[in-house]
Image (cartoon, rainbow, N blue to C red; front, side):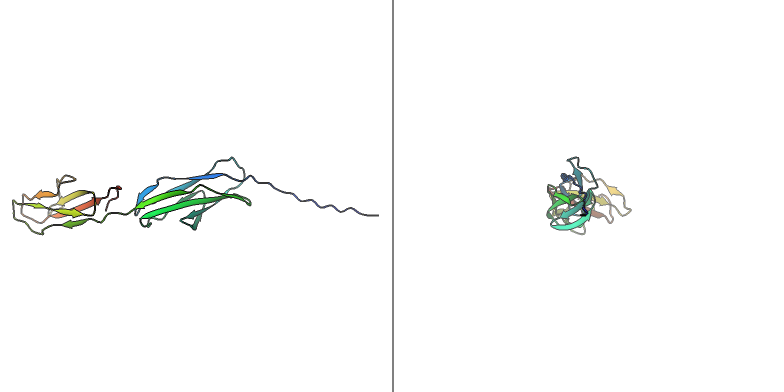
Length: 171
């Protein structure tokens, strides 16, 4: 008498996820961050895991990834691998550009006679925002582009300039 032995295996077939990523912004200044978000677009069911790669290096898991704020000027690319079980796919890539912050340099004479005007020169940007305060810290009205200041009182003044680059980054 021969006994029949049977064996069965249950196989689960997963649908391969289709994922796209988007960035909340694609151009930033040094010191800022970008958040990438992954979206599964095929309607695949099951638990999806995400593995982010930023500029060729694995960085994080989850459906979002936020860059560090210490990125140097340059271009960077992000992708994400989405998986359901052993079925995975790589997303589109998104490239961001990080612009260098300008460094403002203020050139001026450190003293002037009462009633004279003093012209300040700044370097390092395309536009400049000037702030002048008197000895008590009160702001003296100066336009955003005005670099000529007439001092109407004897005293000590603090002149500050912020440089703005053509990319919109400020010092």
